[in-house]
Length: 515
Image (tube, rainbow, N blue to C red):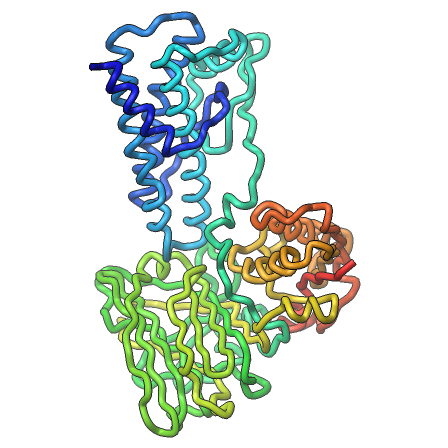
């Protein structure tokens, strides 16, 4: 009966997970929690089972036979691992709406837990069938580490034991897809002609920002350890905040900005940020507008409200199911694309709104307005930064195919580093599609920076950023690296004024040139 049970369990496992080469170096358990309940449980349970199997694997390597109790434990663990492995896809879905940093951490830990789970299932199967073999030296390495008492570490697997001395754990090779894979299908493409940018770097703390207007009040602030300057919007009846665009909005454009919210479970269900595309830059409504309200409350999953007015009449007034609670608490990035009458909105990598006839026709909408609703005075607070408006955002693929080169400032990196911000993958994805469509195309990827910092450092940074884009194309989208070359120009070829925020944003760009 027992042998039959083992056989059935093994058959089930073989259909669930692919085979894995023998894992003899101990996989480190992550030290910290992600803060997403299902992810944390999956990681903990995976490593609890892994520890059991790893122990028995050590026994086998030492030549110690398994007794009946050991076999019972392994059988039970095998069944638990089968159930746990089946739950992984559902857990990935729980990351929708979670902040970018938490998503990256969760993805890393899930990948490590799945690796531990694959090893455990394969090893348990071999142990139960009497087929597990390991070289003595490998066992000595792993047993020494197990007995050393080192605390688990997320950074990687252990090194080998040499001359009886402990060595530092070797980091697992960095895999760019670990952090970016949840964004790999993100299809937002920012416009390529910058119309407006404000990160408030040119404003003094405590002042109302110089590139905005309001009929209320607000101020530029810094927020704890959060990077950069932020504009705090102040609530009130009928209060509006207007970015001072130098020209009217075109037919096709994109809007992006970062939010930081201070809200709690007592925040009202009516607490919302309203983004309006309007037909005027005054503190009144005209006959044409399109508005979207993002919920900020935390005690329930509140809908996104969308409504418009065309020639004085309401055409759309609806509520879209959404759960933005986690996103709101984790500095979300908002992306909007307007293509003639079509309106789309993403929160982080997830698209929540896509309405084909939302915008009034004949370029009726020309300005942007923000206002806050339902905020508790002095308790609920909302901040905005990195507001970017750019013309275009349609299809870079056609331009690259037709002209042989494109330049974009839509691929964003962490400040002073070559780490691609995941929300930039919409552009990288389009480049990959061009390369997949025409296998003969080869590209040179050229990085550029603004003038902040030393020339030599900027040159190195621009080269590193070009290499990061190449790595994303190779790792995530499986483009042959032989088709890609990279180059860095640093700050040597500016296209904008490096004394202004707008100009610096234009100069931080990546070019793709057909070879």
